[in-house]
Image 1 (cartoon, rainbow, N blue to C red):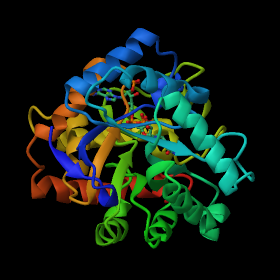
Image 2: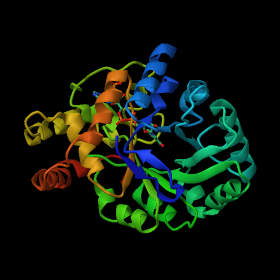
Image 3: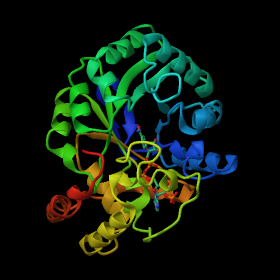
Image 4: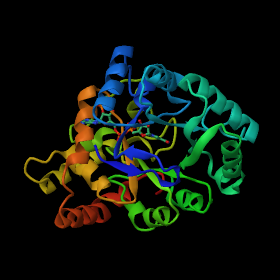
Length: 326
Ligand SMILES: NC(=O)c1ccc[n+]([C@@H]2O[C@H](COP(=O)([O-])OP(=O)(O)OC[C@H]3O[C@@H](n4cnc5c(N)ncnc54)[C@H](OP(=O)(O)O)[C@@H]3O)[C@@H](O)[C@H]2O)c1
């Protein structure tokens, strides 16, 4: 597993990290033993960066990570998020309410200081007001968090965050079916020493290549209840694509695969080929997926021809179908 520097944190993080939303059972039920297998296989594959949030399973994801890492001698880097729990979202934001949420996360994670706390897709007006980023800097100064960053929905929100002098990381939607960050955001992040954490690298699983049209997901899975944005931002589940459209677009990618290259490899390698990216937090519902995803770090970069084809595919075939804005 290769390591990259995570912006101003200076942390050396694995190129492939682990997204831990599924550990809150928000992709359908994950038993405790299965959760432990996912985390253990990630550690064995060299993954040292784990992304969670206070709201994943109402704190279950953080609690599971806290219990799992307690006996480990080599502590992994845990990034959590704050800003979407009921005490804050949509209009309860203050330095005190954020501090209280972070203190609750610290208990669940079993830590005395949080490695990285990210604002969790807070409302646009709250973000653009700018004060919330200063509160995070104050809480860093107070010793609650080592570093802070922001997870955002839109590129203009990400660009706004790059102007804050203390912001260490940005978590963005970025994958073969959402490529726009390449033009302006990735260079701006690199210029400001901001680590890019890529979420949804497989577009909620579409880019595994295994999904079928009209597939039915468990009722407790956001790919069921948020398929058209009924519960949270429409741009999040399946990357904002109408599900069946997403499946047919992935079918269009198949002829672009090299012999012996899987869709997952193509998708993850394409992201890792961007030097401004620090880590890719792929989600996984099984240990085998974690191991397979981790292997992308060992693969050779894609050819220039493949990169060119994939860019054309995105601009001509995909971009117009993304809902919720970019
Ligand atoms: N607003 C935010 O800040 C925000 C929002 C969303 C996500 N996130 C973070 O980003 C992380 C990743 O996002 P995500 O899990 O939603 O999306 P993702 O990584 O694009 O997709 C994960 C899904 O892809 C499938 N998969 C993964 N590896 C596979 C493999 N090797 N082969 C076949 N299928 C594979 C699995 O689906 P099956 O379970 O169907 O097999 C898995 O549940 C989350 O865990 C979370 O930490 C943050």
